[in-house]
Image 1: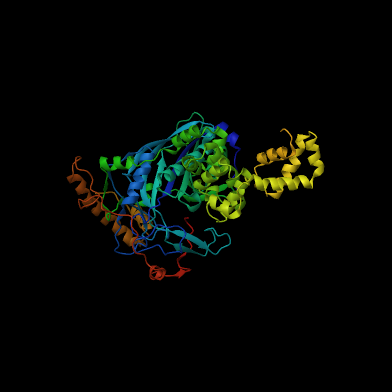
Image 2: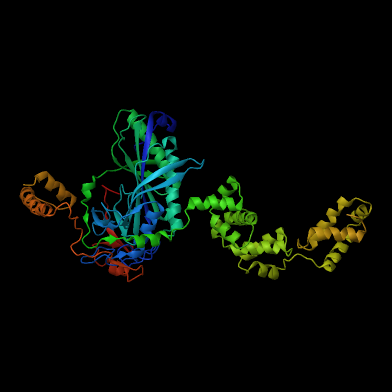
Length: 502
Length: 98
């Protein structure tokens, strides 16, 4: 297999200036498809979510999904775009079995959203202003599985099987303007940009935003030019970049590969590249078609979408707080350090902690439980902490039980186990498992008398003034009560029994 | 007369997956030029103040609510397929694109 020569990233950066551009496809989470009432659902048996429109059968007519149009406008508004008063659909023609109509219904010269921007904050706080060219509506294609051959890839395949469940799923394609000036931060910016788009569409509630399900997909355009030159170099477009880390790695690899090609005096071929996660490299796809090869023309079966200011403003009023602003506000409210907050964000627990605090726990207690015992159990179960099955209300109730003295920290962990095993609310678990702290002095006194009788030499030492020896008796009592005693109270009672001043 | 040469027609035929003989390519080059000229007269009739028409019927915002409707069964979906396997359409391996 051909292996591309690459330059080290540092050397590539010394010689060249990268220019980026991104096309991010977002699958909307509408109940139905863009142009038909067939279900938009992931993971079902092949060809069970299709009707005659999704299959492009003769004589069928598409009808636009209003919710999908509104979701598209919401995305545009969240990206500070202008919303077109008048917008049409167009046919993009190509022959490939993932598209049964032999064209994709898309938008061409009058996208619904255009001229926007988004500020992308990198981890060290550096902000890049990224301009959005357009965000347009279109439909997803079916899914091909290449069969036969040895690699499972298209090369050497004997035939392909097609599932049209995804055919017609509403997509919004977000296209940036060219991004200059990223320099050596280019790979990091690529990752941060896609992460920001994913976060925004998730926050808007318009997409499931799971990259592993293909809900958010990125095509990354990269070109290099020698430092100081204004004219852009020839670009390549890397497809199939389906995780944040892959976006970062793919941009980095293409920069290194371009640099080596340019260094050898050869021109870059304008083409599609495919990212391979296994080899962390790209391979040549097909040469880029000119736009007119798609023979776009206005879709005769769909009428224009006209947006009134009232409609757009009504949608704008539905916009949630932008994710970046929300993070700043929550960190300030909770008083977490940068490191603590970053850990919470990385663990995906911001929503859970927010709900826990809203339900009455302190920010410190919420973090202690979610980042501690709950995260630990989630790791053992190999699930996300948020998916473990602990609700914010459970955390609040456990905290209240501790505050009231009904249980201690050690018992609280057992209560959590009980809740996870489906034994009910924390209070119910305490009752069922008999986990309440033993606060009945009579019961404690019996246990203390037994412990003192079992260790007469220790009792003698304490009587003689060696108060620190009391620990051994406290330990004995805790053992007998299976940890359900308040250790401080036990200590007090032991000393009182022996007539010694604490 | 619009300039549509034989190579343009051959390119279009290839994009549209239409097989054409040499004779047909020659004939279509002439005929398409006439058709393009005819359509051009529409642009000449409309002034700069007339916006391009995307649809002949003056309707906008024909939309439906996001409510799930009917689906086909797998057997129905595959009933027109030349070949199928495992509930899916079976198509020849296509190498030039992926």
